[in-house]
Length: 448
Image 1 (spheres, rainbow, N blue to C red):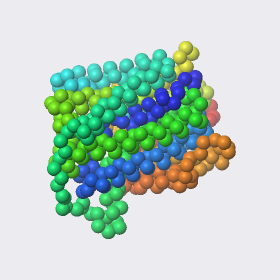
Image 2 (image 1 turned 60 degrees about the horizontal axis):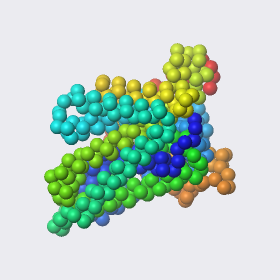
Image 3 (image 1 turned 30 degrees about the horizontal axis):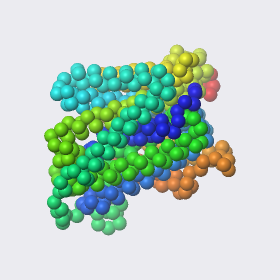
Image 4 (image 1 turned 135 degrees about the vertical axis):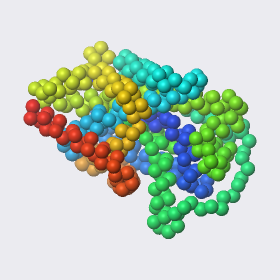
């Protein structure tokens, strides 16, 4: 692969993957948990801090292993080839195609709304078309994908900036109402932890997507400088934008009204600032945001699949998987992009769209195994720094506590998922373990 991506392209991918549709709906959902405005800001800032802990650690891993698919390489180097293979198996089997399919489905839904249609066939065509567009862009080369992300991320930030400006400077402020009701179950130490856990659970996944940027580390110029800057600055910018959006929302729509209509908060603020056209503009902004997030996934995930499969091409040469592995490991000699993995990613996502609709249910099955892999990824810094690090390399600020914060928080979510959603969690674990016989077959075929 060729190192063609600069700081701005990586920064655009970090921000673009994280800003999807969540910021438009999560404030309304959080209003059902928070009972004071300061709590809203507390939860968004806290989740930004947790994400920053993971992102800064990932930045160190990407500088220690500046290759395509850092996720795979870090797990393999720290915990052995089976750990690296298993995360790739889960990502390729369900979470990668499922994530793209779910976002594309939402993109098609919003396209129908904007153009006044309720046709499920047209919604599917919009979704498939968006996936194919980004596959074609990324097949042209890494520079094309990077420039596309810069344009789309810039459009998102401009749109959110206009929404913030309208909510703060144009729309009339709402009347201040003093709430007397306390949040249920927030008394005592256990109640406080439960209350914080509920708020973090609502907000944290609006910050999701920061790991995806690491998949392109093999194509970043000067990765030891650009990657840490992009990861740190990206999360800080996102946190600031999210806090400003919530400030604008709360200025126009009090918490009580947010609870009553949680999905209409963004539209209400836009209409208050810009009139009837504001609601249409918000739909268009969400459309662009989702389009950009989709593009980031189609750009990043094939790099992870390529890295995972490339390590097993030789061992699979004597097995029935040989043609599949060779195709997924194909690197275009003209553009130096993983063309086979890009085509596979687009094709698998389209299959998911056609047969599973939004694919959201099956993605929920792998929440537990995926978060286990994320915890292992962040924890790998404890094993890799002593082995691969050197004095003048980038190091995670606040080490060893910063990685530990992320690990502890995500471990708590794992426990919660296992307790409150045991069926889906068990299915996800079962799908993950289905990779064991495949791995053993590869070992028998050629050794790994």
